[in-house]
Length: 175
Image (cartoon, rainbow, N blue to C red):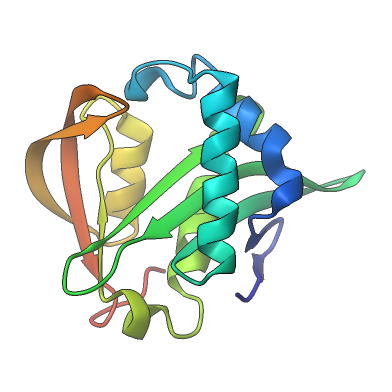
């Protein structure tokens, strides 16, 4: 998978060394608030290992979003894109609290969806943020996703009310 950069944000494939980022993201009560709360460490590690394997095998595109700091590039979050046509691929993102509100998620999502071959590979992409997650819903709208209404989604054994957003990459690439 290719890497991409836009200013102070870049994306790269997730790797074995990113377990601490996953623990910080998925173990954080604030980050996981709209997803039922933090996950236990063993479940986070297993999910990280699975995502590294899926990315390495080419079955998913899962990237780490990094931001440029005076000390160099540091992990700030991740973006996952999984699925296969004809069903819509699903895109998800998480950003560490200290990097929120700076456009990291928007830039990382746009970079991932704009990688060469993304439109042909993924076709339609769907995002399912919680209806109460204002920032993620605004992100979808700002990237040209179409609001398809509310749906109930199961995650980690719980049901959540989400807004379903869709983007056909063959028709447009987010700006």
